[in-house]
Length: 533
Image (cartoon, rainbow, N blue to C red; front, side):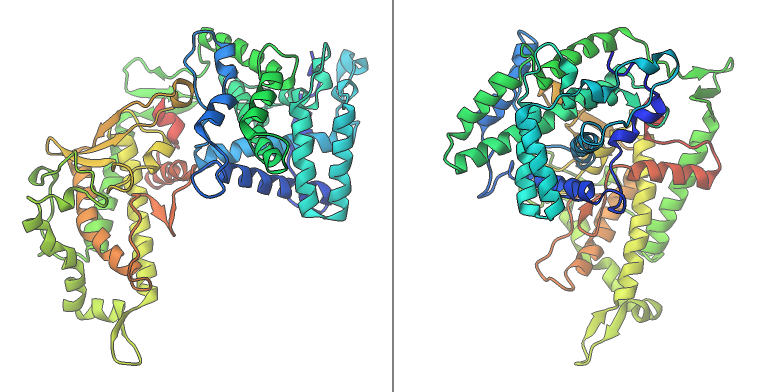
């Protein structure tokens, strides 16, 4: 076994990506250039003048799926990944480059323990082919010269030599497979990864390999070396099939075994109730049921205060909207449509679009806070007041995220929650009014990449939480739209619920919201994995 006898707490060090250029400046430069290369390749997978991905090419890149599982429906290569997943996938290839630099190039990186000290180390098994050695030397030379353009081309060539490698009977002569073996250890605990998690790592490695094959084929067509589709079919037929003695072929075989093992094992992380079924214990965390309701009530109370007293200025004359009192057309597909534009709501909602601006103008303290006088005597918005208002809106949305995540039934995945839009864009929105309640309708699910099929995920918010969202969309969004247009008259507010500075909230933000909510209410720390389970 390639990893037998290795110190698990040392297995991560050979591919830990450097965070600065102090000790390994050439490697740091390689990582930066590789990151740009992968980003460029991925960016050219989408519609535009430089797009290199067509439907036949998508099918050709994933033809190995059918070969590895007879009878399985053909699935095309899918370039669409959540930002967090994309960062993780690119991270594997950066780690691979780091591993190449430190192990076959640096050597002597591993130590053995106990009786296995005399066994062969991983670097003893790795044998670079002639093409790989030549490409690697070119990478090192360009890195020393700090020629970023030439280094980029050298890294692409070297990456392809790792993919296009027929190793014969010695699988671990491949530096790519040696690296994948190291990925089997969990750095945080220095223990073996669960089969499903390890399988996800291998999936990411394969996805980047497909991306590189696509990009290389397009560059070769540009250089007059043949049609892209023909090049892709050649590469995939020779090196990306489970019946070939190649790194990706071997990894595909590992994945089949891991799928089989995953179906048979029972998760070691079991949640348990106490005898009275009032305390749930999960991973040494004891959660009392009344603590959940305590958390929800506290977050709702604070969200209500932020919305009505801060964002809506505590105006008692402003009518509170209720979901049950409004109509919605679930089939409305016009761009920009949401329940606020339903013809039966117009009489109620149209006058409210300027409601908060009127409140500001009618209140001397608010006028002094929000309005200033320009040199020509016209009224202008104060930037400081707008920043404060936006910060309050962000805080309200953090509380709302916790409430939606925990109170609407089986929690949505983080990326799914943050993809929710409140108005139509080129796609249908995700927020609707139905049966007198706010309904969230998304279609993404974890198995979508494996099945190629969408799945309806529908959640109804509790009336109190739903009404918070309705009032936010009716009043606060209208005022935030005015703020957005103060500099650019034609600008429009983001259709996403959870966004800041023009960007959708990133992965990990919901976990932080959950942890902060738990800390505020002095209950055991929860994050999204706890809630999903």
